[in-house]
Length: 144
Image (cartoon, rainbow, N blue to C red; front, side, top):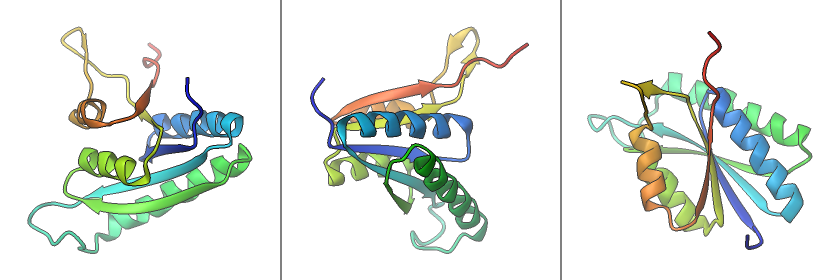
């Protein structure tokens, strides 16, 4: 695998995001890579793109503060950013391209529908459109 210099980690309020950030920090420590963490607020088309959405802004601050704490625990410096976009997956792809990242590490929930693994449209879009490597970290199945 080529040397990593920049890693992007899109995060949300789920456990998969925390684990993907921990993995990104481990990889960053090994390769001395820069880690960028982004939280994307999806803005409804009926609102202006820069609309103030208090509940989403409050949640994003909690998630990004938690990301900073995880990175500190892992002894890795990160750069966090809050983005507002019409579509989360497009924002992640554009951010990865703009920052010229070598790797995106993202988490996903464990979801099965009708006996088949189900990936969200966001994950599918990111996997399809990113021009770099992707590590997809899936949460384990719930315990019965």
